[in-house]
Length: 391
Image (cartoon, rainbow, N blue to C red; front, side, top):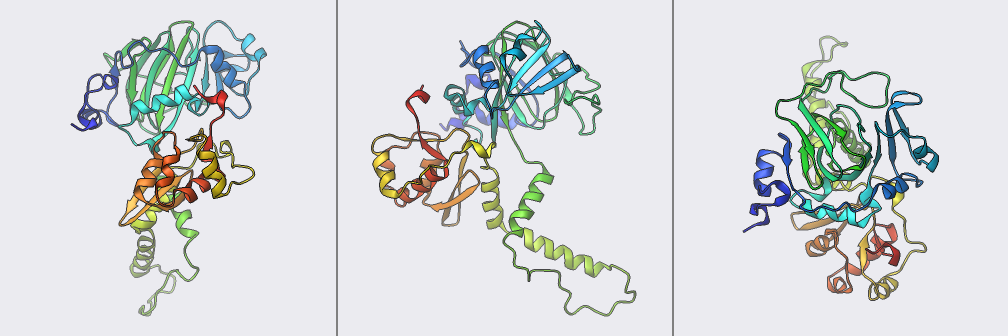
């Protein structure tokens, strides 16, 4: 039996195939006890500590802030910020906690029925009683796992892109939120709620230790994809590839843009864009672009292949925090995509490297592995874990 056909507690005893067919990007799903006996991988003080670090993306949302209603502040914060906060009605949100806490990153293994390259990050929020970010919608799929305390979730329905939002604040809070009957729940630790994009929802903390883990899955918008793909192609097209109208008939009106001219331009655009191999290479690169480019630290000084072999015999290699990998085979050519770059190699090697597991010295038995790993270490996509980083 394929793992796609194995019922998962994580999905309320649905199989991944059933979940994908009935719920994914279609409708919400409440899952009681998705993670039985769940223990939060970090506490509120540790989350606040992360929010105080330089380079960590964090936001503080205060329903009644010093500067007005629904005040949003951006980190890094300090102790004084947290000391001045009231006992209720605020939320701390920290992005990409999976980049900093291995135990949080390990949660992604539970979602391996979904493409890893679709993952955005794992955000964790903390809130005392009444803490909320208001009723809103997101344009991504998200699994909302209750880590500690209780949060009340109320759901509306799908809303249009142009749904009115409250003006003048740094949040996209809906002006109108209509509760869907039967969609009002309090989640306990281990409970989880799946929401597809554009589904209105409102979460409010019910306790003084409410922590929610948000596992988000991104999807490029059409405008982002078209612009990015056009830029990728444009870098490779020669200046001689341009509009051509050789053999055209004399025009009746020199000021008119006629149907033939539009058709020639349409063919130029479509013939330029419709290149499957180019789409494949662009897509692999764009979907492995790191969320925070400056988080990847190139090896300094760069290693040569002999040094790589010597080090790998001592310690296994790991994916760097924030790195993204994927692979694809087109015809007889396999490309490993890593952090926005592409490397041609064997499919076996690409699969081994893209899988988020430690790489041991036995991988060097595969053809071209030494050269590839050396490049990835020097680029900062792979690294040797320090002892204090290990769980």
